[in-house]
Length: 368
Ligand SMILES: C[S@@+](CC[C@H](N)C(=O)[O-])C[C@H]1O[C@@H](n2cnc3c(N)ncnc32)[C@H](O)[C@@H]1O
Image 1 (tube, rainbow, N blue to C red):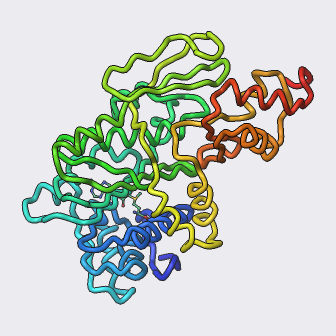
Image 2 (image 1 turned 30 degrees about the vertical axis):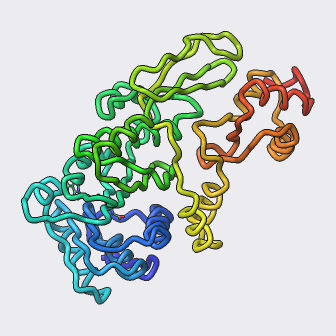
């Protein structure tokens, strides 16, 4: 059995029990999120494997009332052993999310962590049954190829949305996942307030607060809609609503556009929470870098991937700093984005971004 130290936990990893050290930054972010959101009460770690999350939430975020589950008997034994070794009076139940949530005596939880293999879709409805007003949901998806449009039909089948397979795919994947959570929660008369979304490596994770009420559910559903994208000049537009009118022609260059969705089109972040998290993370490896980028990001849908635009303009690359400065000088808001290291979020629009790139005058016509 390998022994691993992570945060203030020290755990053993049994053979056949899942533990991925590369997901540490995401677990760090989850601990910071719970602290920054002032979360307390009953916590459900619904897919616990080694028990690492529950153990860290207990030792680092002050939770004592924790239920951990794993469908795999070996994992449940391993997690229970780890909890004892970390001095916690907790154990992991060898139960499925479905069995536990429909068993009748689960009660309600204030925080629910879902970190499954692949898609979270088969678990969301059951977890909503053990939710209540103000429950915090933390949901991971690792089926990013589906959400990012490499398997478009699978996304339509699982999430009910047509995914984007372009430079916008990670952000639209997050927004499709949130649309799914919102639609599911609406069946139980919960509205969903997204507080933080993270896309890194092969995973996406959304953090959201539920608000009980039919009106709240409808308000959240109204934050969803469709986006259209121009594959030629990289322009995009979007509109909320069940059947919004989106032009089939790009408003900037006249090329045919394609529509995608439905997806959530509202804000992704509560900047008070992400600000506190960034402060707490300091120079923490992984989590610190991700959080400071998120905290600086303008909270508006989509971005411009600059190399895509310079290629269309048949120009060589432009220094990002100069471009950002130029757009800001013209009075536009601009930020970098977690979704693309070469991308900018801005209210300038595709045409002004292209003009600013041209204005920088780098090597017109020489690049391909
Ligand atoms: C990706 S691992 C969880 C990793 C863990 N949360 C961590 O941070 O290291 C997914 C776990 O969910 C368990 N699992 C799969 N389906 C389940 C279900 N329906 N109910 C409960 N646990 C399930 C698997 O046995 C596996 O241990």
